[in-house]
Length: 283
Image (cartoon, rainbow, N blue to C red; front, side, top):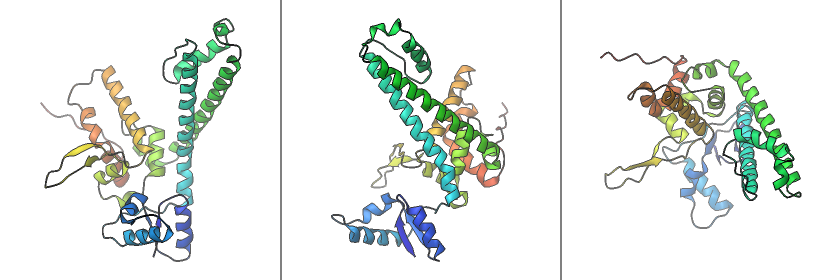
């Protein structure tokens, strides 16, 4: 048996070791840290990994194939581009504010702002040395938008070719991006015995600081998957906006669905069924 920390390159070496006939166990670094003694060196780290691998009840990371890692790469790439787009939008807004130009937050106002920066009459209030810099940042922002749109089309194409993704998209609020991300990044569904395990893997579980038989539950721990969780939050927010627009009654399925969404995803992937609307409760 070979135990490794689930860090960069761990899945590659795990596949190589499995090809040699070894049993490989990948351990999350957070579960190795408590076993580390004072100071840090290779011998202490190896001892900590060895001890963690032999502890009963230890949770291990499933080894991913090259295809699984390649499927998840499109979302990692998209995340990088979206963060870069946000950084450039904030940079443009911040620098323009120094010259009295106030722009709303978000990507939509950037289109209008780019048109204003092309207007010579409007840009006359800006220093001549600053104009080409703003033009450069706006051009880079437009290029990022095109690349993100290209990745969105690729994700939508993959969504049409996968039955599991199609089933997830029957859940209200779940679109092709969230559904494809779940299939690409989630562990094998057979390793999760119930929906609560999937919610805990996502990080949608309350933090605990329990002692003396008292179990106070805190806010969401946010210690799980950092790509899928924000997508589910966006999905839920879109449904809330639609409900507010159409005046959804209090106590409706939307209110009950929020804490159950990860469990619903687990159920669809396990039972291989489409989402069914809940039956109306008789008065």
